[in-house]
Length: 163
Image 1 (cartoon, rainbow, N blue to C red):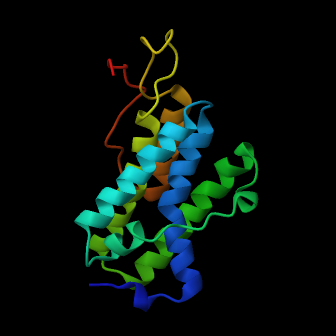
Image 2: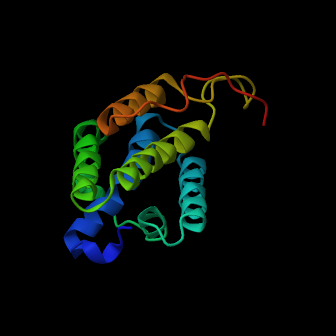
C-alpha cells in the first residue's frame, strides 16, 4: 500500500489538487449554486476520508487541498489548465502507487466532479423543473472523464427530480 510518505511535498500538493480542481471545473462551468456544489464536494471528501482510512485515497481525502485561485486563471483558462493539473496529479500517483490505487484516485476525482454537478438544478421556475446536470456541466464532466481515461458514472444532462 502506498502512503503519503512516498511523495515529496511538491508531489503531494499536486496530487491533492487533482480532485479539487475537478470539482472547481464543474462549479465554474455553469453559473449559480456554487455554495451547494462546494458543500457537495466537501461531503464526498468526508465520506472518502472515512471509508478510506489507511489508504492513499483516505489520506488524499482527509487533507484539504491548497488551491491557488490566481493560478487557475479565468473560467476560460481553467478549461485548459484544469485538465493539465488533473493529468499531472494522476501521473505523479502512477509513479508511486499501484494501478488499483491510481484507478481509485481517478474515480474519486470524477466522483467529486459529478457530485458538484448534481447538486444544483438549472432551468425551471422557482426550483421546479429544470435539469440536475446542465449542458455545460455535462460537457465539463465529459472532459474530466476523458482526461482521466474513465467512463462517467452519471450520464447527463439528467432530468431533475423533486427535492
